[in-house]
Length: 161
View 1 (tube, one colour):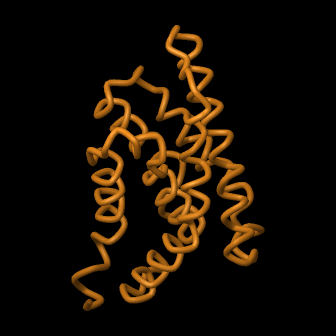
View 2: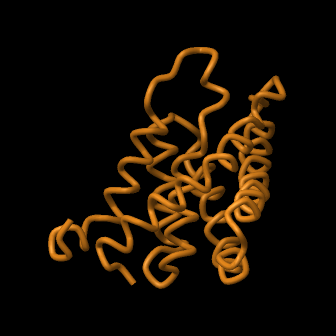
View 3: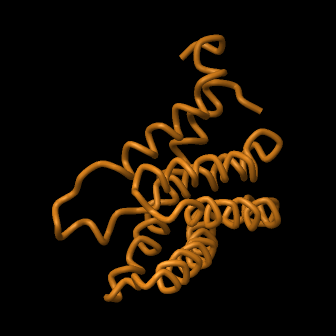
């Protein structure tokens, strides 16, 4: 990749890909295991480039996710904004952890996100009925090392700082 071509579009393109992975249809048995793609990519960019990606980006991505999923307007926006806030607060600590500890930290951040969304579902009278609701936290934590390495490589090739 050349520096001139990939620099302006790499962050938005990564969010588009995460959005596509989030909206991609899955078989019935795999639906509950879908990682929180958008949250993972958001966490990476907030940790890597906190001066470029922050609360505003999280809010806009959350609103787009709400609209695309037909969810209560603002529920994912609130959740992703809280994720970005927690990440901004602790990114300097999380970045120095080994990847497996980062994965655990990401899982804890996603627990907060899932609790917020669960609470909103409950308040609106649509609580998720099974323990499978929590599975994306585990799959996301397990995928974190690969997401981190992939996006770090893209960021380095495009010389983003």
